[in-house]
Length: 137
Image 1 (tube, rainbow, N blue to C red):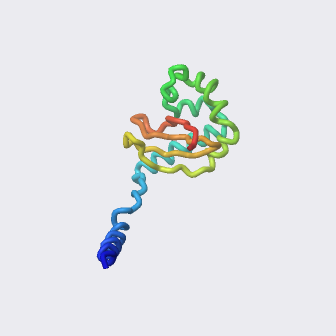
Image 2: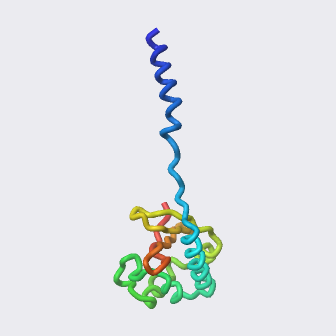
Image 3: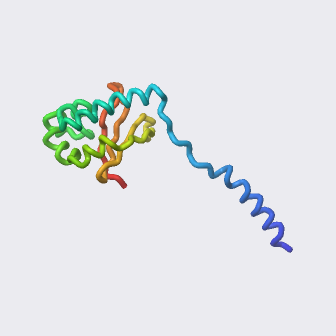
């Protein structure tokens, strides 16, 4: 008979578990941020379609990923463009849906996964910019 009280307590705790195990809320961009990003990504995609590395560099935070050796558009075109902006990645970036989130510093970001990479666009004081390309986990 000692197991009956234990079962009652276990059942009571199990019924409370869903209240504590709610999924985290998905981040949602404000309409103003959505509109700003839509304007940015439209220009970014036009530059990709034109295969215009210099225009993409102008929409990128430089030095690129804090690398002092990629501090201007010419260095970006020579070092980053051939590696990260292959024809396949450019096509993917043009058609894939960006996902909104906030990073660890609470910055508003959009990310697009392409070709095993994640391209991150961060809202900065200068507007949205490409800020990072990481290998997808």
